[in-house]
Image 1: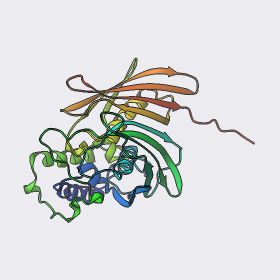
Image 2 (image 1 turned 45 degrees about the horizontal axis):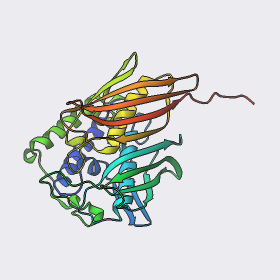
Image 3 (image 1 turned 90 degrees about the horizontal axis):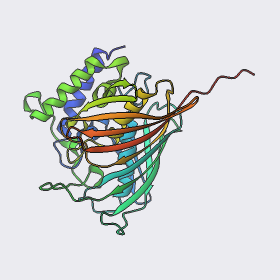
Image 4 (image 1 turned 90 degrees about the vertical axis):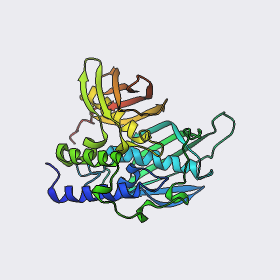
Length: 318
């Protein structure tokens, strides 16, 4: 089933609205595209929501996993950022996710809390944990560690909308003729994803790599651009992990259930493309373990992920 003409029209209009909002400093295109929205932002708890729609649904009509991983990474980062000055940079150092198997239908509610940044290391670190809930059921449990590195040279950091920064939704809607080169590229990529989306899964075509199974596991390639970018132009952390897990699943199709994964962030995802390389560490009767490495075009290591995959439970008769 392809994306309907009516949904395609809605998605393209949504892209223009998101690009217009992205002109405001502080946020990024993926955040506006998913409409990642603050509900609560306090030192004891943060909570954000993502509403369902044709722009973020998978083939089963649930929330695409890339959107879930984006939401987990953003929420956990916010749980740490609430303790510090909003005009500083933070970056994911480690991220752990565990999937419960509950369907991700309807609104996603992402909530959690963080410890605050401790000055015991050269780059202050903070840890956080949280949960993603859909229709009253836990879909994902997550935790991670963040650091506060300096901003890239020559770049000024601005607060996110919920930190007192500008709300990009107040920006006037851009016309196609007003788009800059990078924004035109986003619009083209979305149009291509609409055409190529399998079973109506836009984000699979837009945000995930094209992967080929190999004797050792799998190999993939993910073009980089504003459509994936964070506040400093690098690939957003949750979307990097999503790319790694798509590659890992391709390596062990006989173990179709992804149960959990741990990711270690080594250097920024940047340049023209990121390559994924998944290696099967163990493939047993019931469980498989896969290691996935991500590299920039210059061969610099970006991310290391170890994921667990399983067979479905066997049906029993009474």
